[in-house]
Amino acid sequence: MRKFLKKLTELRYSIFKKETMILRDHLAADRTKMAAERTLLSYSRTSLMLLVTGITFLKLFSEEIYFVVLSLFLIPGSILLFLFGMVRFILSWRHLKELTPQLEETPFPDDQKKKAMDKNR
Image 1 (cartoon, rainbow, N blue to C red):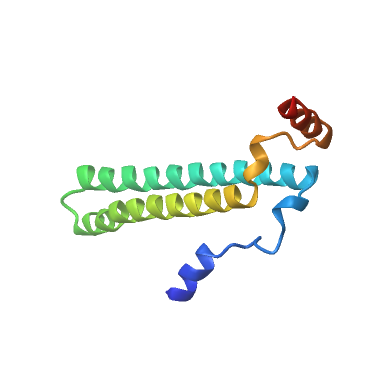
Image 2 (image 1 turned 120 degrees about the horizontal axis):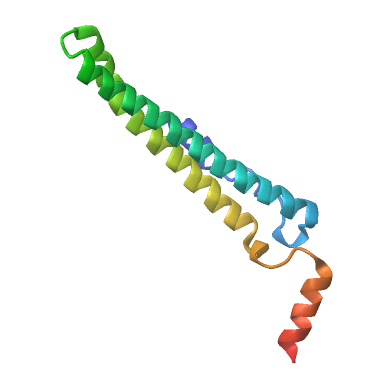
């Protein structure tokens, strides 16, 4: 379990220097952010479907023990899946912010020079 948590939280791109990022790296970071958001939505959608299925089984088939037991696994499982997705999203988002804190600025060198010159005036 510890190895899994350590692997989950380790910074995969810590060998790269933030200062040497080029346009391609910035675009890749943007794609990664969008993929993280898309994955979070996928976890949320799946979790919601498990929750709704569990509640439906409880309401419609409350007489049959098989469906009651199944729903008792589905409802907590949906909550755990949602929490797992949130943790993964938060960790990846923090990691991306550490790797690319300058993403709020423009990735184009000429525009950065103009901004720096404007600040000096």
